[in-house]
Amino acid sequence: MTNSETPDAALDLDNPELTDRDIERMRPAREVLSPAAYARLTEVSEVGLQLPAETIKAFALDGDDWRERMADVLVKAAKAKRAA
Image 1: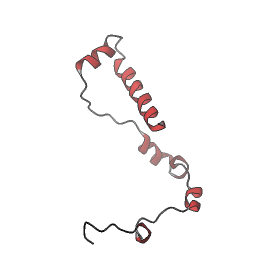
Image 2: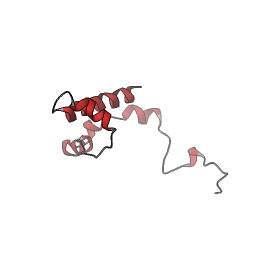
Image 3: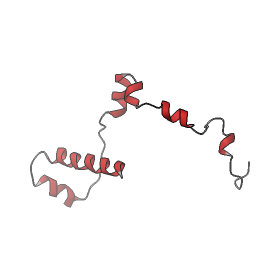
Image 4: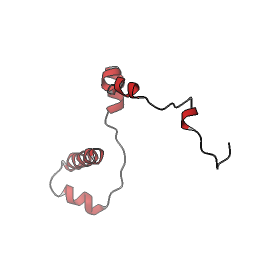
């Protein structure tokens, strides 16, 4: 296949289009995975993040729990973004 050709989705045997029946049969991951597997997929990960000093100061001025409060703000922002 050349770059100018577009593949026919109907002929993609490795990635067939979902049918209405397939979609109706879908269930949330927490219902089909073992509790251990679901916990691994949803666990909190520690990462390094570079932020402007002004941002950190704004949270740090309100107390020693600034990391937790900042994490809460980021979690709320991520949920709002997913909901949009």
